[in-house]
Image (cartoon, rainbow, N blue to C red; front, side):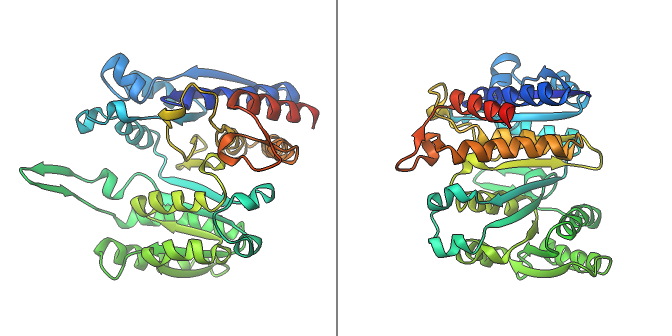
Length: 355
């Protein structure tokens, strides 16, 4: 099978971690008889430096022509002083909107080998950490009007019923395929948008009698994620809340470097990326953890390409890598064998070949 992948290497550690994911995909192709055609796309700070635009239209068209998009990371302090429309992150927002990917799925699952790396007490970890946060990705505060006049700044938070319905359906369907529990997270005691969110979620629940729906205020949810993560199966929330909670959830699993994510819309084309940033302080030092990017590639195989067996093999290779005692610096533990970014990718590709 031939598939075309638009690859955004991006900034900071982005090129390093993407390169390791491509090694693994190449090995998947060899083992299963697939050909992955790679098209490089410029986005982020590197695109600003080259074209003065974080995502030129021609680069977006390359993504739209691909079967899916694999992204490393964008941004960094060197571009922080640019005007808002020129910031690397604006390219990411434009990419999400252009691809029409409105549902961001971020799993928070601890690998047994990393139980001691979690900042939570071992008894909490042993109860199980395995939930998915479904984040609305193309609406809300990040996509509202932004205005600064004198010493006053305004950001507009808007949600419509159709926007809430479509992310709600994704969340209910996800819960239906898992353990049948969905928690809707909002701030309905303060925000009109959250009151609408809650109303729509309960209306949708009538079509999913097999899914148990509960509500939770976002501040309480932030506490519950660290107090009792085992209670959660699927969480669904709006854009900004999801941005914050998903980063919190990633840290209780031991390392933000281990967590993949997928962003999907109405079709099969998706945007796949690790949830961490560009980490410019370690860029080029062979210190980055590429596992989140490798697992994002596995999600792409499963969710966009229908290659579940291939995705399983990648995940088993990561498991074998951890079982063998290899660790990058961010998850290094006593008695383990520290490796760099490149070696990590080579080892996982090797375990995939042997497995």
